[in-house]
Image (tube, rainbow, N blue to C red):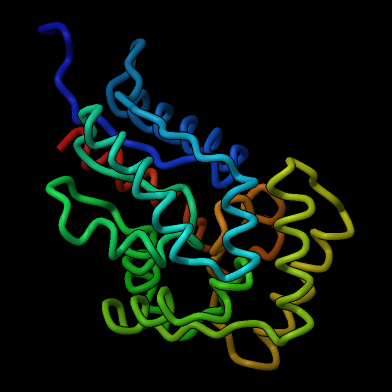
Length: 238
């Protein structure tokens, strides 16, 4: 084998949160190693944002300030030689689309690998868990509908409050609670029974640490973080 081994460099826009960023790094390296074996791992660049800034901008709906902050970090990844950009957050894909629209470097949109997986599973209506912006705004919902023919439905107002609180107060800090796990499962089961949800999008990149497919075996779950990283592995080796 000729060295250095040629593969594309994955630029990771991270820090949102640091917990999810660590999981992305593991998924990417494990994915490359599964394919290539030996000691091979991914070629990566990480631009780690301060999650304190992210939390403040999101909480105050200051999307302009968030976009300006993200632009600096994205520019650093491009300048560093990234061949593709991954943003480690469903929430931050709202400003990301505009930021990357004129860039020469491609971005793998977090919704697309999940949309493909749901379409392959022939699902038409799924529940969406995530931060409050993800559940309330349409930027991901429209993409799932327009590109993949999948309708996404959000929990009710109280359930959204609980889901969002658990993300910001627990999951982004690495706190895994049995009580919170029980609450997420309760909401998913209600949406399946009452609203006809055929599956569940884990639309925040920390949620898979709290619940996974084994918790509701017959209710398909779509881990946006893992699917996103799998798509990046394919790109890097393609």
